[in-house]
Image (tube, rainbow, N blue to C red; front, side, top):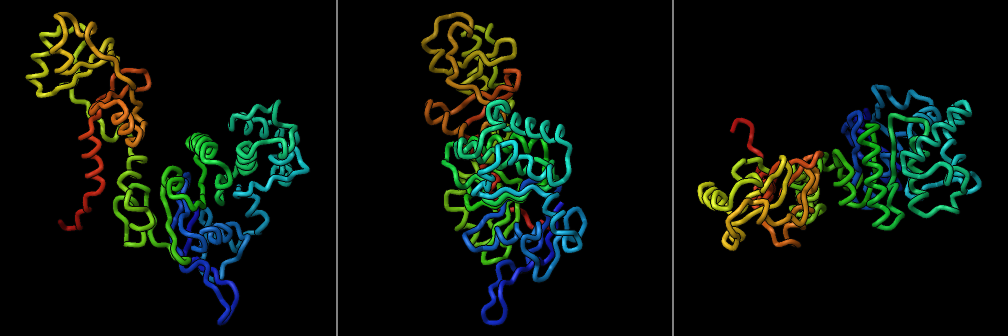
Length: 378
């Protein structure tokens, strides 16, 4: 855990002084990833450097796992934290193995342990150790170098990672791939991470919580969905943009909006006559046809009008796509628009029917998020 208590950093003195960070107080919970967001010069990178004492506080306190960092040896403090920056900062004269092994060597690890750790990290980041271990940074693409920067950050297995725009210098396609890889690793390792970014979409995607700064002050600190649906003031509302409802769609998942109402389900062995009656009785115009508990296709009133008498498996239309429960509502809506469908089906990890999601379900979930919170006492 990292706790900031009125953390302040002032450069210079007197009339020439500049306050880069001013009375910042909040906590980063153990195992969570918090993104620091704001315009250039708002203090986010300065706060990161205060955390590992690359800069020293002017006043206030920072605690790491309950210990005041000012009472810690600064070198040991930095060695206990992973640190990654936008420019990657790999040593050009060292191999990939040498770069990743930098901190473990400083800590006195045995050679076999270091070798094992380097290979483990390369595999984790989907880089073949045999192929990359003995190469030099100049032989790697920008995206591969960024992966090595992350590996070096993780090398000594630190509990805390400090990351300063680590993916900002690479192209959007590779950046998204690396973001996904990093989130996969974080889901497994559960490190405590302070992550500086200037990209709102990256902050939303990566952060369990987002801290937004303005002129050295913390303005709002909340989970992404709260930040987007309940901005604290006009500055936050302007910062996240007028399209924040669309950004929420990138956070919410199919599992958040889907419903499991059985009236939307018919078995593949049911007859067309039975299906017509069911659609009328259930007041729906779209049903999922299931076979062995798995989505087989779908039928609508329009399909049944043209269908000959028989079983639904003979007349059901195939879904253009089956949704995973973790599919974002943004992608769900995109699939609906591209395939001209107002309802899609969600399948579980075993491919079995889990529920359906309609355009109205998405709309309802959005409206629920933007509803004004009730005051205490009603």
